[in-house]
Length: 244
Image (cartoon, rainbow, N blue to C red; front, side):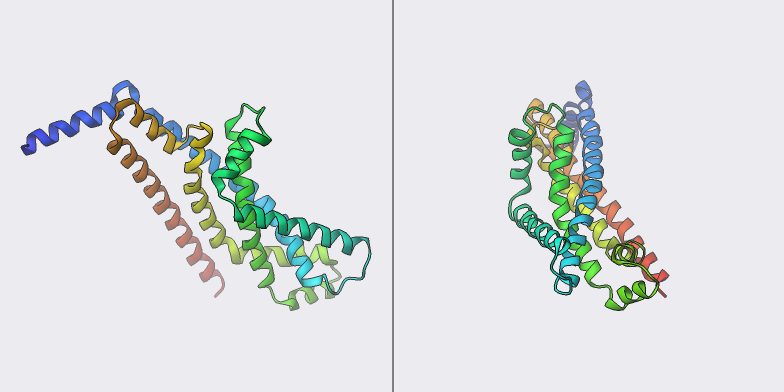
């Protein structure tokens, strides 16, 4: 095959895969679904993770010092369920959790995006919880004592002193969790949600030519990951410069 023939064949393949019948829309529409799914799943994961991390860190820091009573009992019960949640979610594949959410828990729902957001958000929450917990545990106990000297109770100390410092410490790691989740959402096609990966697979099923569409999907993911990684690195540099 001559070079001209090779270029001509590739022009035909690109036309059939992306131009004909506006098949490129499968990728753009899927990209929008992927970004929307990732964004809302991260928000849900942060909300769940903060609650779980506060429960676990409170038990680890103050559980032994608290007097036995209703509040200590509630804290230990909450910590038990938090540990079960972390064990189950981190110990099972995300694709299995997604299918359980779609085929069992929310089988009557027709909103596939909502189902996927819940599944990925609950999964992400387990990892965000450990990220936040490590940030809270890294704060020196003197900060708690400083809060008490100002007349703050434990909740106020956590709200105004500990959480802001912990959040700043874990922000780069939290941004990396967003990047990880962005790639994990590629399994959303298991519940027939047309995300970026599913869009590329639809093109492949129409053209019977896997290379152009799937390589295009891989390149789009690669560009997004490189872009967000650069933002994370820039964020880390700003945080380091602000500490000087």
